[in-house]
Length: 390
Image (cartoon, rainbow, N blue to C red; front, top):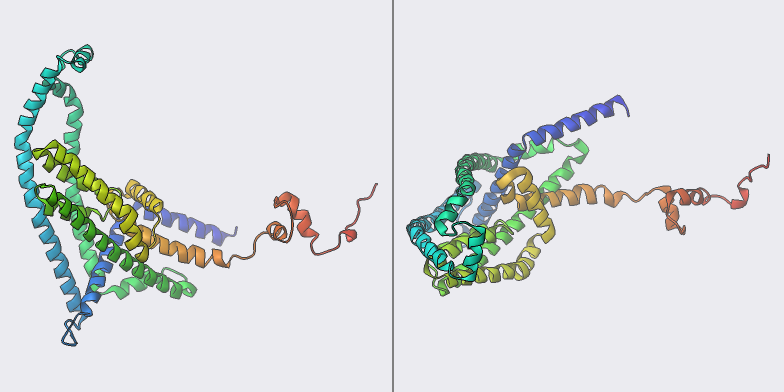
């Protein structure tokens, strides 16, 4: 390799190291771009609204402010609908915890007269519930410390969300300078192609966003309706929460089932199991019916690819990477298809000589065996000089 190529390789490795060092910042920038694309999609939809044959909004800036107002109203309404009832139920749950502990203590006391209780006496010196809590205290203490750490990370996540929102608004109102700056990072002969790929990324994000919003709405309605029919308290709030958590595939449904199960447990343990069964049915409907019907028409993502992407981004980027795993995968799929498949692999029609010779009739494609045949393709075997005896 020449000196220029060695320098280029070193610069490339240094750039990868810098990107890895600031990966959280890169993830926040992508989150800002995703939010800007979502608001821009809503603003473009508002620009098409008409009243008596005239557009209600004829200015893009007014449409953006209208879209921001609608999103703020939606999220504030969802928070007012979900947070206060859950806080009241949590207070009720904390008041019932001592009662539940007394019931468990009585049950452990009665258990000593049964075969299972006699077996516990051989394992534990004093198998009552209070002693079990005392023995489990060293294992419970780290959970409380983890709770404080979770609170601190949540506070940090709030400030990160505020920064991402500010970046999204800056990109939204004046996107062309940021777009042109990104395009300038590529060679001049490839910049038109990059602009085309960026347009495809925006269209794919628009399609994915439309599909996931429709999916979230259907899941929220199904979950809330089932909980209302079962008589579970706060059915509407639970339905809204289930719809919002559908944004995170595979993980969101597991998180959404816990609050209604706890609330149903205050009334009847059997009702809690019914809630679990209903959420399993809704999840199966989503996996086997809604996702193939809705998402496949918008953007094609294989289930295994989705799960692998969630594990990858959650491992290296934490909870924020888990939330943004799907839009990141959508964009990465577009770049992979355009940059690698269409621009490189589809034009790579000249393979190695031994492979071309095997296509022309060689039996064994092994390079060491096919290479002599490839050399002899252009000439007659009779012209090959025989080795001398000397």
